[in-house]
Length: 251
Length: 281
Image 1 (spheres, chains in turn red, cyan):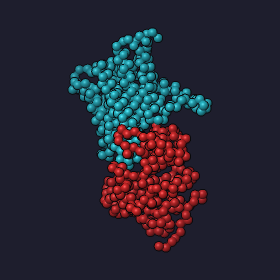
Image 2: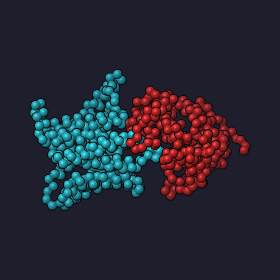
Image 3: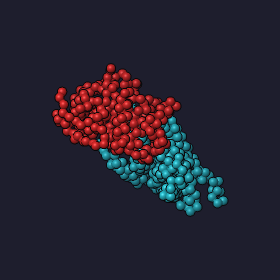
């Protein structure tokens, strides 16, 4: 199968400060990649370049034809919930539908089919009842679900999630990962997280980001390997959430 | 009561009525955008910077509102530019422009030979002296604002709610920010005649605060803001007439009282129980 996108020898950063260098990564349609790494290591920078918010300093990101449609990228994006202004006067349904605006002209309106698609997603996510609520009236987990609907409404080929496991309860976290596993049948997923312990159970492969990117083609990764990648992450163990106990293994 | 109704027969009061309507429309719509995006402080900067234009207008002998318009739009674009390109802290840039505009205004007014008789009406506004030419100008801007918000409603909501997400979707965020901030400047300058520089910000924020009691929906908030702005303006005008007090101050006073009463009722009803809550739109 053809890859969705390829990052080639990319360096990225802000003004004069290079945060990431020599990054190479290929994302395939069936991928479920967990992006881990210490704070300040460049996870956010990688994300921003993928989303087109930050142009690479060196190298390039090549999108496959199937990922492009005029100006439109087939990327669904779930930002961190705390980045959302909860006082903004907007209803849940309008947030979800706004995910369709990228395909529209400046004066675009929503078609009946699009409205139905948005309603269907709300139902799928079990939040139909919140449809007319304002975002300010939602809990962290509920808002997370709404933002996931917004990311999915455009039928992306690649779903990018930024720290979806912060500010939500364990129950929702488990539910989210199960849902991602199902979504992964239709789209590639790139999940950024600082919580290695939990995500390694669900992701297929791991990309460790710390000044550069080390790709690890399995979800088993040991502390020693992380250290070798200069990826000093604490491995957190959770009692109630299913997780892999990470073990040493030979290559 | 008869005397209150009879004032509608006066020409100046009819002008004031139309001016209040135009002001309510523009302030209701644009103010909802300002409050939602949390750019009240930027708008304050634009307002005071435009005083420089009024001073320049006096000095050069041109229409002070035209001067204010130029200063208003330029300062709006200037704040956008400085914070993005020149690496100046946004609030510092605003404060500087705020004070600089007032300083230029005062210098020019001081340098203008003779006495500037209408200066007070620019600082505090006087809706009762709005001319036909002013009204025409206000009507034109009201039409532009209504047309813009109706035509681009969904795109405005999209780029305003989550700018970063809109950028990842290749939405024209920059363009919309620039056009919208220019509309903010236009609206502010146009309403200087009604309530004056010092009070214009309240017409852009208090009706929205009242609307916010009843709704958390961008569209409904716009419509309700227009309605409450109009109620407040008319009540203020009648106060002003009855007690012989300045109209701009009376309008703001009426709006704040309206907000206080409705907020108290809403908080009170919430305490009693959800059943009695004020209607939500």
